[in-house]
Image 1 (cartoon, rainbow, N blue to C red):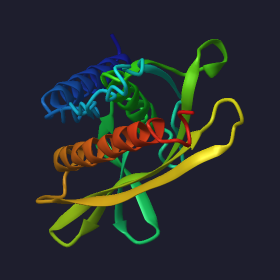
Image 2 (cartoon, rainbow, N blue to C red):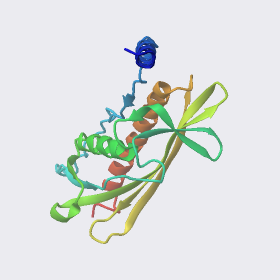
Image 3 (cartoon, helix red, strand yellow):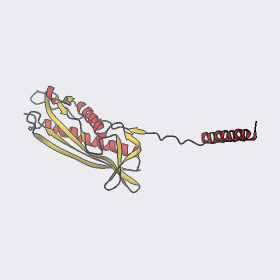
Image 4 (spheres, helix red, strand yellow):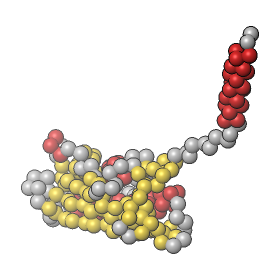
Length: 220
């Protein structure tokens, strides 16, 4: 073996050993674990109102309600949990999200709450094939965490129209715009405060619907 060949082999061996050292050093570096995604949901409240009162020994039968899926304003049509660190700025939580888009969760919760009432025979989304007494259409404008100093508040804004399914005329309009204080600015507190607001909003929705159903504007 001449000197040139020996020098070449020695150089290759040094490169190989250096590469192995780099790989071993890389394996020993700490690996940062991926942040866990936390998912929250909104549940139906346990609200139950009174059944229809009997008149002249005649108890009105339960009714069928059409409830259209709630439509969401831009920025609230995804499962992202939105927070506002300052006016005119809306951002999604990085490691927390809703189980589904808030409008979908609210739709399911509203349907469950209405269907639980003793004066409701059923809740449908399409009124074309059912003897519907009243049709409800709602929009979700806002469900966000507004941050203020060390504390903040959850803010829920939604509105509903009650329609006569025969004439399509508007029977009533309702807007819910309330906030719920939060002791800390984090996703868990935001979810808890949002659930309180949802309970209040859907309770009002049920009470408003019942009042309209028993009034002369809907029941002939």
